[in-house]
Length: 153
Image (cartoon, rainbow, N blue to C red; front, side, top):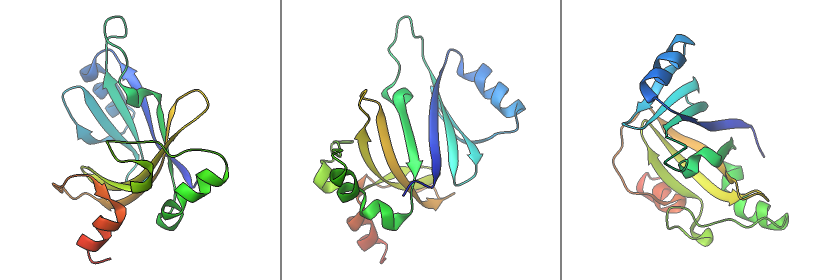
């Protein structure tokens, strides 16, 4: 089912210094925000999220204990059943209950579908499938089936 690592996240003390560092390594910015920046590792396939944090005064953002595994769309549709057969529960994500997943996330510049679960230590894990790349789309998160209906798929 797992085809590769889609995303990983790191805490950084100074986002601008870190942006300059990762640009020097040749990475391209996928999205830049005030306290978070995503760099493409392989455009459309994997990225690195940098989250500015002061670990002395501010707890790490929950995404810093998060890894996403890339899967094919057909496998994602079956992910909940796949996990449950292995005794792994799908967890709530962004107010979507397990029975409502997979969900579609409008993470510009790329739209994704995903299912969320945890490892034995409580780390957030995700099966993710890219749906669209390089399209700035403004919509709310929704169930995958609703997204398919809206896009005539």
